[in-house]
Image 1 (cartoon, helix red, strand yellow):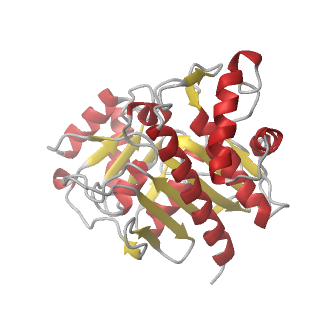
Image 2: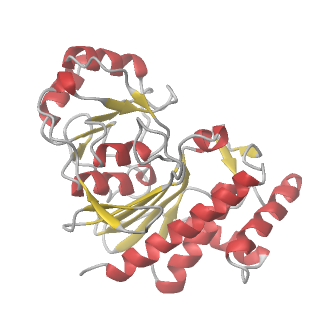
Length: 329
């Protein structure tokens, strides 16, 4: 099987990162965050996950470049000394041999600008930081891109229940997909791999869609209009992060819409790479609002795409037509 070693390394790295996140939350440090220049929050979990996952990748694939969301510049500031010390303490619980210098330097190994040929990894250490801060849903997202195409994706969803409609005493799901080999969910208790598939709904009026919790990430007003025209009667499932991709891939929602909220906004590749391949390998379809396949060959952003439409595949064209109508494309 191709990418077998990469898959094992990626899954284990994401599991270690999830353990770090749980320890940070259990020590009540989850609400300690810093604001980046774009005013988005970042926590020691973001930095810690990035350092752990990149170090794990480099130990097995030292020549692979990595596109990571974070850099260490903020955590190196004098006024953030306490956060830096907390970061070191938590990372060393998972990887005792990493010094403070190692931790900061490896975070900055995620500064790769991207390329259209060859291999590169894309990492979102904490996708859905606001969800993480609230104690809700967040995802650890890691993908391998080869010649501009995602060939492997892993999602860690530490707070996601196995079924959205039921209480789960042991939440925490891991999802992965290798191109051409299907999509799988790892049972958090038994560790077994279970193949997952999107739903087979053909009538949009019976479908369920999910969208971002934060309205600045996707237009709730336009989503409601699209749902109305599709005849959807159920309320949207609002979930932070790429957990939405996971929910569609396992058949609990038929549609995920990420509609542009501001002119000129460009999606980042780490926000979609892992989730997209998992949905596609589960039988679904992922495009932009024009029906174009997401182009991961353009560096750190999806600058040839606008918005994201995710469906079970069967109803994709119908959804695109309505999206185009509402957005006046």
